[in-house]
Image 1: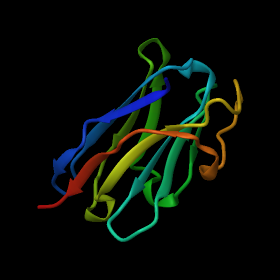
Image 2 (image 1 turned 30 degrees about the vertical axis):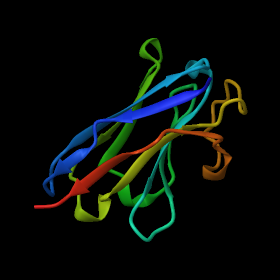
Image 3 (image 1 turned 90 degrees about the vertical axis):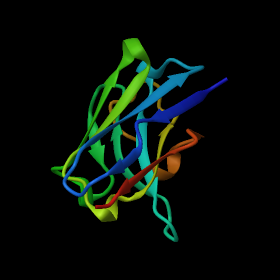
Length: 128
């Protein structure tokens, strides 16, 4: 059973930092891409960042470049989203997802609409 579980969300002041974790199970994470997405109230879900099986990262939105980074620890079946210089407009529910079973060992990240399995999400609120 494929599962993705996000954690690390919460309330943070503008300019602060958070690190989200996405723990995966039920598939060999090392061979697949993991992406982070977010959905703000009243808005469509937005792709943020992806990391491929070869550790190549792709930004799906320019709004987080220079502030957010992604990394993976295959031994822990975990992908991290490091978020710095947080802004109120980063407030959203954050989700991780995988393109398993597609794109086995691909060096590239998939398109944002090519993810099949999703976590339940974790809330990030950036406010003073």
